[in-house]
Amino acid sequence: MLEKLLGTITPTSVVLFLGATDTGKTTLIRQFHRQFGGEVIDADVGQSWLGLPTCISRGLLSHDRGEIRASYFVGDISPRGNFLQVLAGIAHCLRDAARPLLIDTDGYISGEAARAYKSELIRLVRPDVLVLLQRAGELSYYKLYAHQGITVIEVPVTHTGSKSREERIRVREDAFREYFQGARVQNWRLAELGVERTLIGHGEPLDTELLSNLLACSVVAAWRLPPIATLVVERWPFSLAEAQRAVGVESLSVLLWSEIKDTLVGCCLGERLVGLGAVQRLSSETISVLTPVERATTIQWGSLKVFADGRHERIRFTSS
Image (cartoon, rainbow, N blue to C red):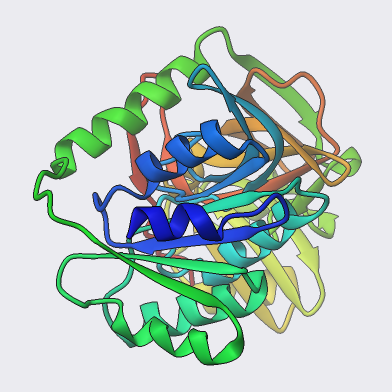
């Protein structure tokens, strides 16, 4: 079967690899990339091997070291709940990609949501070759794309070894810890910075001292962007209705500072992702981010907390 696969890859091919976790997708891609050249896209945000976790990256390998040529911040370690960001990231990395192009994917394959997500991925990429690495026919659904002019090749997986959840976490911790070594806190004015994927920092800055007195709780930062206002607080106000009347808006979003601190963000210059950071301090006018990046024009909000020692956890917001 591998001989057949080798015979289908040409200098202009786009090859998409699907398979559950630990079916050998990455190993096969590394092998073929050494043989055929071109570029690879690493779209496994949880077990990234070309770029950083939470990112989709495109580039090439040289002696098992990666050279990243494009990257996109998804902001999480799972595609679940992030289908739009993952598909947008793959579309971003497809631009100007060299051929042959080999695309690695995450191991999320079970259930209707996974099939819908992977089907849209196939429609987006329109690969010349679709490689299904499977143990017991779990990817047979995707053979339907043979009727759409795509060469579908099934590769049986016989090995049973797999990394434990703890091992996967340690790999990500090592990657984050190494990345944040030497990082320092950058202080950026929100008026000079675009903030994407959140209303934090958008609109008219509000007087936090006045709001703290009115609401009898410490307000860290606040902005009004009619018809909504966003408040970041140390603890919940006694009355959200009273808070809404005090700010004078139709709706109110209240976020706890304890849930925001250490949130992972993507740091961009224009459209280009230049690095990651972790939120350290916030006011209505400024944001402080731990990052090796010196300058950014936009930050993209993630849904993961990351600490300097590499520990990380998914955020479960209790906003109102």
